[in-house]
Length: 294
Ligand SMILES: C[S@@+](CC[C@H](N)C(=O)[O-])C[C@H]1O[C@@H](n2cnc3c(N)ncnc32)[C@H](O)[C@@H]1O
Image (tube, rainbow, N blue to C red):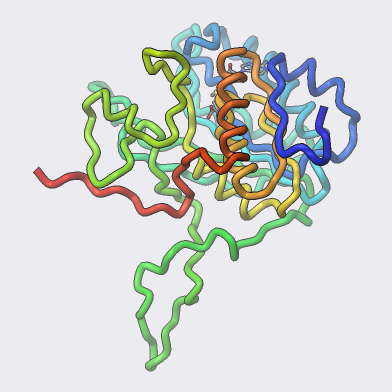
């Protein structure tokens, strides 16, 4: 299933069934995933909270059980909506569940984007979170590969430049733009600009895309800091393979499991293109585009 020489494997099946077939031993150095949010997207049926958790929790548990001792589990989450019309911040819901697997909470990372769904009755939702857990307190973390440019690179105190010339710690509030945005020197909310992003994976001739594709950059920053070249990364809700792009483009191996055949096929094609050096993606440290001046 995961050949040690293969760069990636995408399995089109139910994660729970696939994971249960794997030996219960340390397999994954990083699990980076975004489960369905129960919003009634095309790939999910909206249910009540208990039903939702009954489906997602065992998949997370089977994944966590196969994490290496120095491994990390990053859960990318937003808000969930339930049949009883309750809105729930999913990090709140999943925190005790992840702790019950014996995982250690490390940090809540805020992923801030500038375009959200416009709302009339509340503030527009402009962030999601990444809940970072590790298997033990002896977790792998390499800051050097994810430094970002200093804000004031020439700032001096008593004549000496104070900042690290290699860049600063990116902090836990990430301004990596959403895959919904056009990359370039302008952005806009005209619908067709969405197709301008270099990471959009068209699923048919009409340009249909995965409704919840996340940008590679958020996974890439975790891949680079939490794993080493050759390590194995799992996404049990792989979608069109964005976490896989972050892994394979950075010489890590990837196992993605995706229930929907169209998404799974698109992920395979996308990752083959990465292996062939043909896929384009927006690196985690790319410059944020400025709005066009009108
Ligand atoms: C939030 S999306 C993830 C999108 C992904 N991060 C990307 O960038 O393409 C959740 C995905 O989980 C898939 N999924 C839902 N239940 C699943 C299951 N039991 N096993 C495998 N995949 C599942 C859905 O089809 C959907 O593509």
